[in-house]
Structure formats: structure tokens, C-alpha cells
Picture 1 (spheres, rainbow, N blue to C red):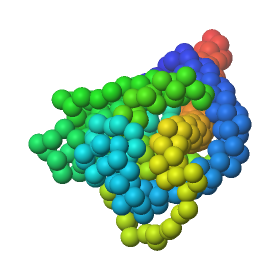
Picture 2: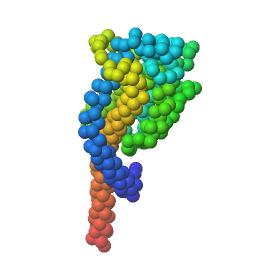
Picture 3: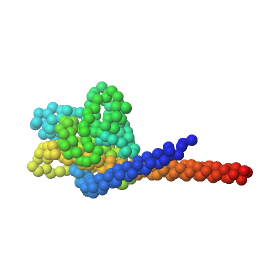
Length: 299
């Protein structure tokens, strides 16, 4: 049976742990509130731009090939104006630490599922590469794909890491297609795994039968597309990192709230055990007193 001292130690430890969890929860809540409005306000605008990017690339393949022919690019299937390696990059935005609930695993599962499909579609060719941000993401990847190479880049879990984003962009834009897997904030209690192409390509598992639009470009299609490739990719990727941060703060807040509730339940059980021990000690003292009184009366 657990002794009184052990129960008291467990109570004190649980109280301290609960205070720590609540402190981290308040920090996560504060950070979430600070960036929530700006992220949601820019979400529709920036992903609308990304949609236009996709429409332009899809609708003007003929024009793009003519321009690429003028540039001397032999592979006409590459709807690009700048040089790329012709490969696809799957990017996983994960976390460096824990206490984010189930969202980290769910996002990795979605990432791994599509990555396996991509590798199965071209088993003899190294056409799909992997880049990961977050040490937990690296750990999960090494467990599921122990012999597969990956590129690791550092991003902060706690703030928008402008330096980290700036450093990774040159690596990203060398790829023909860039697909980013991350957590997207839905509401205070819900975040979901999502994938977004930041290279202006329709995702392989998306419906490609969309409306075709005719655009008039000024000064030219080539100039507009070059701007998309050089500037818009970084802007959209920054938005995705912000989206991931918001989801992380929200998920951590929910996870810590659940932790606090779990600790509170444990404290109730420990306090009940403590009360039982106190009653047992009191009964023992009363029995000893009655026993002494009977012995004194017998004399």
C-alpha cells in the first residue's frame, strides 16, 4: 500500500506540474490570439493568388512551351521560366518538441501516405525528394523510412522564423514541384493536416477538371510568370509557415488543457487516498486511546 509520505509527494508534484501546464497553456493561447487574425485575414487572399498561379500554368501550357522554346529549354513539359531540376519535393512542417497532441502524427501520416504513392509510381527513378522541418518529424520519418534520405531545415516552434524561411527558399525553388504538408487551423479546438502546392501545380490527388480562364497579361506572360516563380512562392510559403504556427499554438493549448484536466482528476484521486489514510490514522489513535482507557479502568 502506498504510504502517506508518497501520496503527499505525489500531490505536490501533480500541483506543480498542473501549474506548469497551465502556464504553458496561457503562453500558447496568447501566441495563438496574437497571430490568429492576421493569418486568417491573409489566408483567402494568398491562396487565391496561388489558385490563379495554378490556373495560369494550366491554361497557358501552349504559350509557356513557345516561350520555353525561345529560351532553349528542351523539355517542353516543364511549365517553368527559371531553371529547375525536374524533380518533386515533399516538404513536411513538423515540430521540434512535444505537447502538441495528435496533430503531429496525423500530419505525418498524411505526408507518408502520399509520399509512398509517389515513390511507388516511379520506383526506379529518384524523382521525389523529402525536406523536413521539426525534429519530431525527422524521428517519425526515420522510423517509417529508415534508409531514405531527407533534407532537414530548422524553423522555430514558437515564432515566425523569417531567417529560417529565407534560408530554405533557395533550396525549395530548385525543384520543379513543391508540395508542403502542414497543420491548418480550423477553430480553437480543431486543426487538420493539409497539403498545398507552392509551385503553381495541381496536386496529383486533386480534381484537375477545373474551369479554364483566359487572361490578358501586361507587359507579357513571361514577365508575370517569372514574378510568380521568384516572388510568390516565398510569400505563399511564409503564409504556410504562419498557418502551421497558428495550428501548433492551438493544438498545444488544447493538449495542455487536456493535460490539466487529467492532472486535476489525478489530484482528486490522490486527495481521496490521503483522506482515507488520515481517517485510518485517526481511527488507529482512537482505538489506542480506548484500549488505554480500558486498561486503566481494569486496574
